[in-house]
Structures are given as C-alpha cells and as structure tokens.
Length: 301
Image 1 (tube, rainbow, N blue to C red):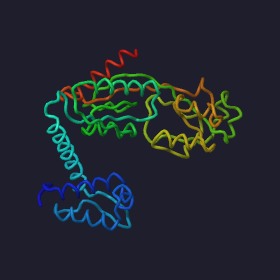
Image 2 (cartoon, rainbow, N blue to C red):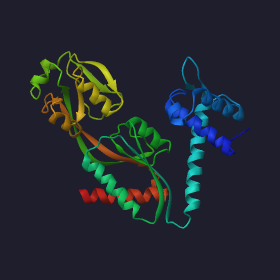
Image 3 (cartoon, one colour):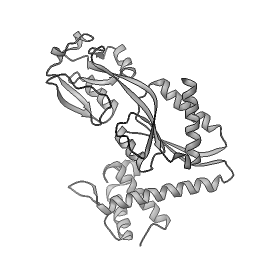
Image 4 (tube, rainbow, N blue to C red):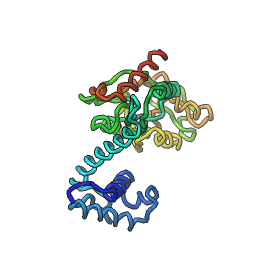
C-alpha cells in the first residue's frame, strides 16, 4: 500500500498516534484499552501496509524510525484536515466552521484564565460550529506546536521569538523563591540572606524562563521538573528551594507548607504573551477568535 485510504488504515494510524503520545506500547495499554501484544500486532499490520518500519520497540525501549517521524507528521496533518472536512460538511451553512487549537502553559493567574474564558464565551455567541481544543504543555513545546501548525494560538512566556510567530504582550506575573516547611531555612523565611543561601540545593525547570535571575553563589541544582506542579512537589519536600508564581504558591503559604525566602531580593517578573502565526488572518476561525480575545484584553485593561 502506498498511503492511508481505508477505515482500517485510519484506525491503525490512530493506534500508532496513541502509542507515540504515550511513549510506548506498554504505556498505551490503558488509553487504548488493549493488551500490549494486540497493540504490537496492529503496529506491525500498519507497517506491513505501508511497506516500512515505523518504530523500534522491544527491550531497548520505544523509538521512532526516521520514516516513522515523517509519517507521524504527514498523517497528523492528514487527519486534522479530515476532521475539519467532517465538521465543515456537517455545518456548511454556518459562518465559521472548523477547528481552533489553543495552547496554554498552565497555572496562570485566575484573572487571566477568566479573560480567556470570557473570550471563548464571546466567540461562542457567533454563528459558528467550531471544535475548540486546549492543550497545556511546556513553553518550548507550545512554540514548536505553533511553528508546525498544530496550534493556532497560545498564551505563555516565550523566549525564542520564532520568526513565523507574532507575540503580543498580555500581562506580567511575579515569580518568588520558596522553601518547604521541612527545610532548614523555613524558620528564617522572608529575610534569608545570600550567605544563608550559599551551597543550597535548588529545583529548576527544564525549560528556560525569560528574565530568570542567576541562583545564589555555590548553589546546586539537584532536581528538575518540566511543569509547575512537579516543581511545587520538589519544593514542598523541604529538600529543594525553587521559584514559583506567587499566586500559585499563595494557598500553600496560607496553609503553612511554603514560605518565601526573601521576596525583596529573590523575585522577578515574567511577561506573558499571546503567540500566534503571522498568517493567522488567513483562517477566519482563528481571526475571529483573536478579535474576541483582543476585545476582552482591552475591556480588562
């Protein structure tokens, strides 16, 4: 077979997607409600129909082949187009029809989440039949998804400034260094000096954060996390210091589980932006949503 053309091929392709998203056959068992040998058989069937190997799997772990990487990209684009075709065919008389894929980094201030919710509500009052998909991920992955067209717009803090993307400032967030209740510095929280912080263990994020300050001298990074919740857990353990958004940490501070080290010297601001492709106006659905979001931003300002 030279391509994807039947319902069976589409089913096998979706199984392949689930395996890729889960990171392996074993990890995909719950999502697919299938046993691992069955999943393996379906992947092998898809490979036979395509005529090439999509992934390496076995004791050495799961890994896409170069052709598997290319197939994943092409098939994902094809299935997205097929989904848009089905939606438009069912709602041919609507003014706006299609799919809107939005990205977030998560844990934004409540007021800003409310802003996005109001924009969605305003958009839903249009003559539309649009499927809205929201993805929460790390900033670097969100930029990648925007760049390759899998997302239409996203809100977060970004640092790479990808040429094909446009960035609009929305609001700023304050990040503060915290320690957990079991940490030796908890009793001195609020007034910790740089001397006290020398040689301490820190938890860091695996993605860069714009404007993040240098850690105190002789600091050691002994843990890392790829999202805010995981970073919080590391800090709550009392074994690591780390930065968190102040609004995110506030309920844990009230409960006595977290405390700021020294908000005057160990804090910084992060600017949040709306990022979208520069050609977004070519898509009426995306253009209309950005118009509604911009209206809510102006209203809030």
